[in-house]
Length: 125
Image 1 (cartoon, rainbow, N blue to C red):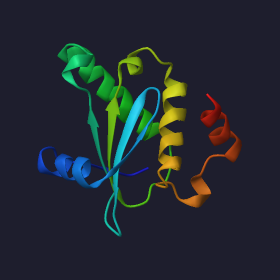
Image 2 (image 1 turned 30 degrees about the horizontal axis):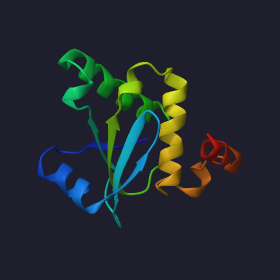
Image 3 (image 1 turned 30 degrees about the vertical axis):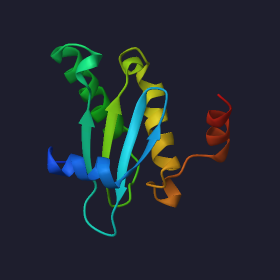
């Protein structure tokens, strides 16, 4: 999957103000769909999560989980926000949740979607 970094500041504010959100157990997905253009991704971890070393580690985990999920995304601006539990979750589970959130948000192309039973199981939890 190819994506570009989302510049901070005004671009982040635009996604937060005009976009939509989906929350999971380990990650919050903030997104703004676009008609055309590249997929741009930003990663955030608030100060309340811990010191700079931990926050950087969480952002690296989110970045790698998105990179290795190998899903084809529609043009959009995306911000993945770490939660406290992000540090403790196993990596495959983190990847699965990110993919599930992207599917719920309608950001995956149809051929890349996950099975409906996974989405139904997630709703039951």
